[in-house]
Length: 276
Image 1 (spheres, rainbow, N blue to C red):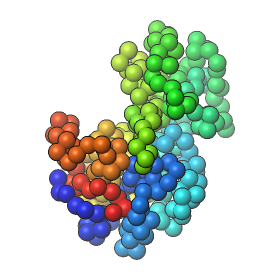
Image 2 (tube, one colour):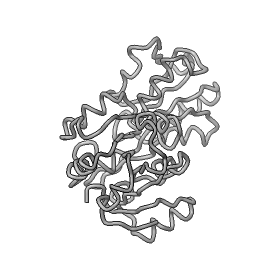
Image 3 (cartoon, rainbow, N blue to C red):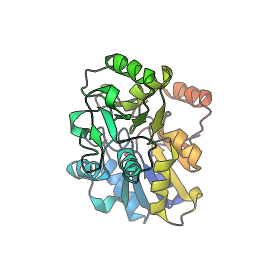
């Protein structure tokens, strides 16, 4: 693990970058300082960029947020979201379940499958699977889903989780739980979960297709999570850079290195912020 103060000195070491969004580029409502300049520098050097997000929504929706934040399409080659990859998995009939789903999601994400031949049901007893996109409100906790999850286990209903993140953090420090926390609880009580998103391979394979024939040794994945970003890069066989100013902002350098050791993770680089 090499400590670096910014991404700039290593840009020319790579031909392509897989960039996390929340915690690296933005916090859902604002960009991290200096991010725009960093993206311009990477593009000026002729490098490819794919944003790889655990957002449980279509890539077009992710692009709209980036545009609103001032990140235009000239600054990246493609967006791969866990919601997009999961959507196409269902669209192609790859799921070994039926067409009826029980939805766990915020209202803004509720329409993910509206143009597919799937039916949302109100009663878990009528569902073939649970579609878990995340918490309905910021105030909800995993305990609010305890009853429905226990009922689902008894009925042997599988869950499709399209955001493996456990939580996200705002620049101001507030933390909010994500769909992964609900899925983790479901697994703990005996439920079966199909996951799409980092650290699982399908999203990395989708990103890699954009890069064409670029050697994996020339790809750098940048993220802020030791649960998803860094393990995903490790499993996929690409270098990684851990940004400590996102989800890990409350930990000091020694604590972060100890977490890496316990998790048997060794990011190639550690830096405070992607935009620094």
